[in-house]
Length: 94
Image (cartoon, rainbow, N blue to C red):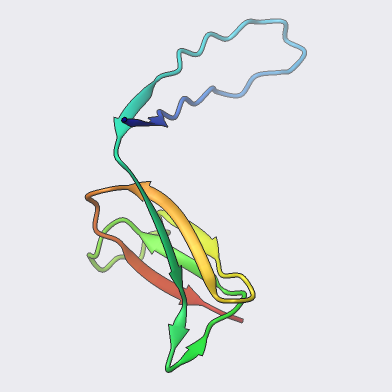
């Protein structure tokens, strides 16, 4: 069964009291969903309560990450993403 990702629809600035109806057609695209669950570990030390940044490319970049999540007290994190895409993970702690 296919999974569906919503297509982003942006509506420009509007007043909540304007009384104007703004049409917005919404749609989805089919994608194959991949669930990634991991544990952040470095030199046999679990990395608790830190940020995990994920880029949907392995190319070097200074752009903002595609996804951001956090590890829990046991250093476990999880994301859902499109399958068939290379990912680069980085962990950030205080």
